[in-house]
Image 1 (cartoon, one colour):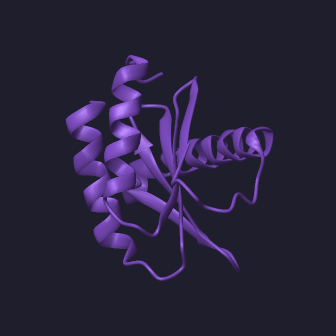
Image 2 (cartoon, helix red, strand yellow):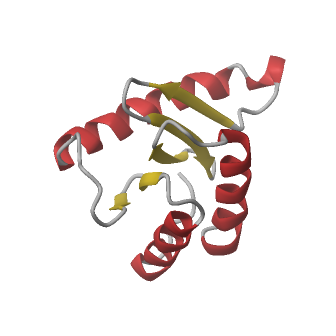
Image 3 (cartoon, one colour):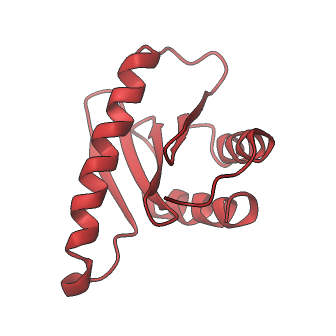
Length: 124
């Protein structure tokens, strides 16, 4: 499991990640503990339990991707695009993930790079 950080560090990371782009709807971290923050005023499509379930499912898929890393390299991020949102998963430590949802009109590669820089500043 990744290094646990204080709630204050999580809060700073979540706040800074939301500032990266106004099209970010949600930023969540899962490393055995669940922390998340929605952009103020955003319409929620999932309740808290659905978000937690979604994070657990994303964590399981991420573990599957990591098993392939010996042959094709470490995964940087994964994205699924739905009718209403993008769902982006980024590594956090050995076993944790950062999950973000965004509006559809966003440059994903630039966003991921900025989130990773923010993760390094606040969580690594």
